[in-house]
Length: 378
Image 1 (cartoon, rainbow, N blue to C red):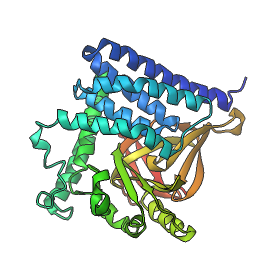
Image 2 (image 1 turned 90 degrees about the vertical axis):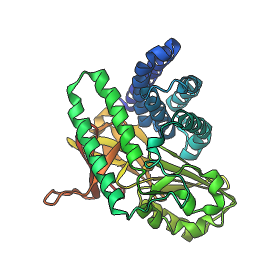
Image 3 (image 1 turned 45 degrees about the vertical axis):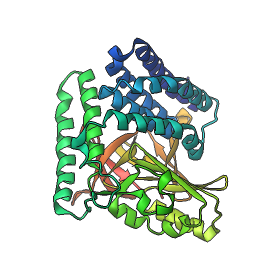
C-alpha cells in the first residue's frame, strides 16, 4: 500500500515524540544524564524544524548546547518546556501549524529566560568579551578592521576543518564535540558585528543582545524609515536568526512591497500580523541557519528564515513533499525528495568553474563537510 502524505506526517510526528520521550527520561535522572539529554534535545530540535516549528527548534538547540557545556541551570528551564513542546507537536498533528508571529509570542519568554541563564553562567568567562562585544562605542571594533576580519574567517574555517576531522570517533562523542564546535563557530561570528539598536535606537530597550553583520545592517537601512512609524518594535535572536515585531503602524501596499524586496535580498521575509508586521531574517549571510533538503540526488538548502513548514505529498506524486517558503512577501514552494533537519552552516561563494543551478547564490558546508547549493526562492 502506498505511503500517503498523512503517513509521512505521522512519521515526522513520531520522530519528534520519540525524541521528546528521550529528553523527558534524561531530565528525570538529572544532571548525571545531562550529556545524553543534550543529544535528545538536538534530535528534538531537528524534528521540530521539519514540522515547521522553527522558533521552538532553535530554542531547543540552544538548550542542548548549554547542556553540552555542562550548565546545570538550564535543566529546570528544559523541564518547563516539555509540556509546551508536547502541545505544539499535537497541534501540528491536528493540522494547526502556527504562524511565525504566533511562535514568536509563545516562545519569546522562554528565550529571554534562557538568555538570562546563559549570561549568568558565563559571567566569569571574561576571555569571551572580545568575541561578544557590548554595545558601548568605546568597546566596539569596526568590521573593517583587517585583524578582526582575518580572525573571523580564519577561525570559522579552522573550526570547520576540526568538525570534519572529528567524524572519526564514536557517535556520542562526535555529536557532543560537534555541538561545542558549532557553538564556537556561532560565537566567532560575533566578531565585527554591530547591535541592531543602531538601526532603531528609539526602541533599544526592546532589542537587547541582537547582533548582525555590519554589511547586512547597511542592506537593511531602507527599513529605518518604515520602522520609525511604529509605536513599538521588539526583536530577539535565536539560532542566528532575528525575529522582529513592529506594532502600531499600517504601511501602504507600495511600502509593504518595498519592505518585502529589502528582506528578500537578505534571505528574509515579512508578513502582516495584528496591528503591525512580523519580520524574520538572518543575522549574517556568511553563516546562517539553513533548511537542507535532497532533490534529484543533489543537496540543496534554503534559509531557515524563509522556511515555513514541510508539506508531505502523496507517494504517487514522485517526490516526498514540498518545502513551503516565504520570501519577502511571497509564499512559494520547492519540491524535495527528502527534507533534513535545520542546521547552522558556513556559506561561501560558488567556486569558479562549478556549474551553478538556477537560483543558487552560494554553497554551504555542514558539520560533516557535505556541500549544499544555497537557493534563493523565486
